Image (cartoon, rainbow, N blue to C red; front, side):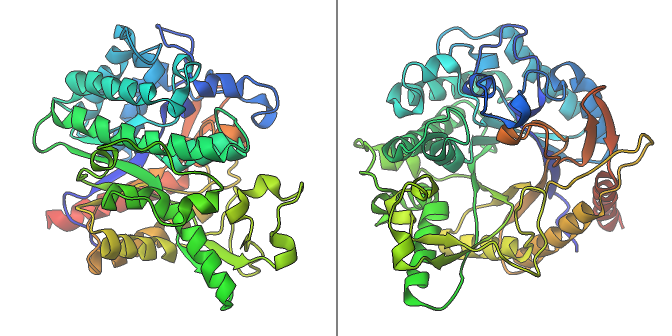
Length: 463
């Protein structure tokens, strides 16, 4: 595998998952603070109040990134740390933290890739309607402008939204994520539209303030969809799954329209689209961020099992209850999250995106796996499964690039073990092990492997 000399080799994190210091230096509460503090919402009642204490250990953590040879670092900015109420007064201490982070990264030769929104909506905005309200969209655009003015002279890569599918569907239908609302299909549809509109307005705000070489785009969680058998109804079910998981956000971004049949599948009416919305949403982006973890294999359920019942109601809206996700794969390998390891899906997804939507550039903004890593108290954490995972996925990225996919960078999820949302601290995704009791960082064997891989790539270009 040989990648271009300017390829971005990075790792990714998000603010609520690593920063901690949720009550310090003027930071306001977010919907995730409220959600995690609600009994029964997260595994073992875990919260991000301390996380891995990155807020206080930032300098040490950036030095660790440099030791690993990273050329880029994708982080998210906590909206409530910068604008505690979501709109109005800006918190200088919050801006100062990210200002210092960007400077430290650049001093170490690490390209900062800043994500504006990784799910931590200020609680005050949620109490005024949250993403169901267009006022939140405009507040988000103003927040983006604040960051562009302060950091835009040094940050050249901006991710507007991270996985809006999760914010909308997991936040408003399954309730697995904040704000924890269940069975509100219309809420999920309306929230999704406003997230997309927020992306478009943030893109405008950043572009109006920063240099021409600045690159802006969203990051979507995308899944290759396979039909589990050759029945006609299964092929139709696979198409429903594809528009639900992938086209819901891809079509508005690249085609300026919502996929026909999507809202019927979701059991909802179309969102409140106003004149000009779709033009704002579909304004050209500089790159598409791809978060890839696994594929889905779908079958059509038998007719008697496809009707909504009390037992199936939480599985999805009416149009999606005919989908049966196949997980009984006897020869497959699974991560600690129960996700199938399927590296070839990344190649397929990258090539399909290139062929269907023609993005200017692609970034692998997240790719990684949780395994049951343990530390025996010495200086090593052995995680051979993750090394295989990374190697095989990078081979697929290289293959996609040979076939024309315009991939410009790869970011491992995650740099650190951290707060894994509703799973609390029970799942470890990091290349760096964190002993939560002491906050000690131990680079796992996978982190050492990745550092060596990056060094080898640099050596190839130095010859």
